[in-house]
Length: 185
Image (cartoon, rainbow, N blue to C red; front, side, top):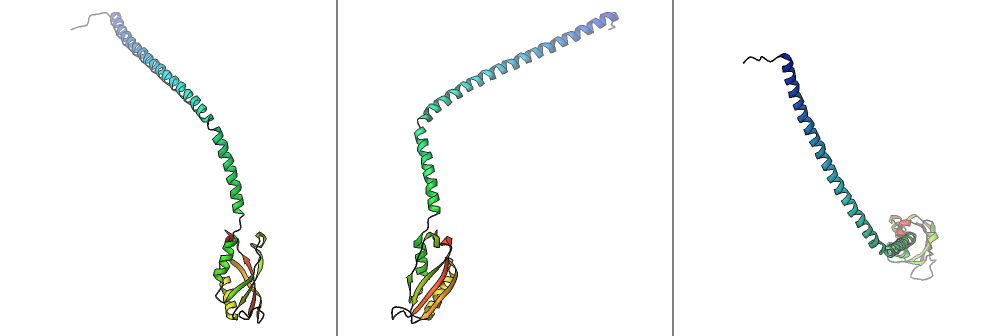
């Protein structure tokens, strides 16, 4: 078939077809915009409802938590008391550990005559007086103190035979030692 339409009619038909296609695109575009507006509106209502519910839950929880303010105050007071107790316990000196440590280091045949312990003596040189049955026991005592983790700077101040008050313990020994701070914990 031969197209006998004039050129102007052909141009008008092509323009009409383009206009219809553009009209379809415009309708689809407006439908898409309407769909997106509908979705945005739905999301807005869902979010506003969630916000209202969350605010209601917050107010309910605030009223519930106000009942626990006295418990929170007691907890804060307890925390402060525990902090004070920890500070005191950190400064605590356990003399029983020192005394049992000395007793464990003493060989049989050696007796401790005197000891003076105070918080000021921890970490500083002190003097310990012992009496022993033999000089070998006194030397073993010094070796035990030197090998111990509880004491440092162990040395004899004096070691004499026949100076003890009792006939069964004739050897008198005086040791200079420094008590480690770790021995009191």
